[in-house]
Image (cartoon, rainbow, N blue to C red; front, side):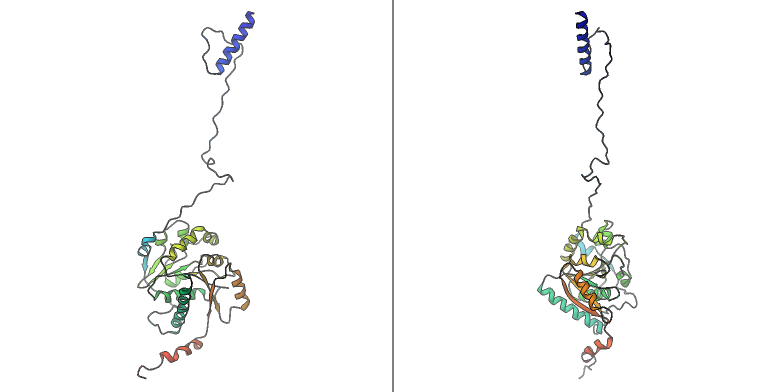
Length: 307
């Protein structure tokens, strides 16, 4: 019986040792040393601990919110010094034929604006070299001759050229704002002594369509519409990229530029069909010979004042 009691006592001591209790003083050592089981702490990895369920790290973007209350006052002013041979209308020569044509286009668009909510306008073409940039810039200059502020934005992030026409820096611009490098008010320039504001394309990017597809672009346009009577966007051609198609869904209307003797009827139909929404407000014919237009204004501006 003593052996049984001794075995029972050793079993109790081993159990107490595993549970953390102190063995009785004077008790003989057990015949078998049983090491308590060590439980390792759970593995923690600071890098992967907060990953979403798909296992991919995702960083939330924090866009720089424009200072809408002081936006126009914070824009930098630059002189109006168009590059030679840019064919921009001269505000000091209002009776020139090109100036009259763009004032006529301005009048028609303002009439449409009085009948519907039309403040942001995409100016594009079916193919390159049809005059979309020429039309967008001169239309913006003509609109800025009125009292309300006008924004001209170069959103052809693939091949921007409007900054060359104004002989100013390409960056900072819209891409720099979207990539959170600069606030929007530092990207917009005010043309001196006018109501015209200019937003250049900004730094070159490898993924312009993905950048323009950010939800923040639509939010930005909504804020700009509260400040400018007209927002005129120069975009890539419709048949060569999807940028203009995307931007047309974020704006109020699309103005399609065709070149007389160059743009085909099939290209016009294809370009209109690429648009996700039927928001084409008009088609501008570019490239007419000077004689065809000059005859319209000869009577009004060549007649002597004393007659």
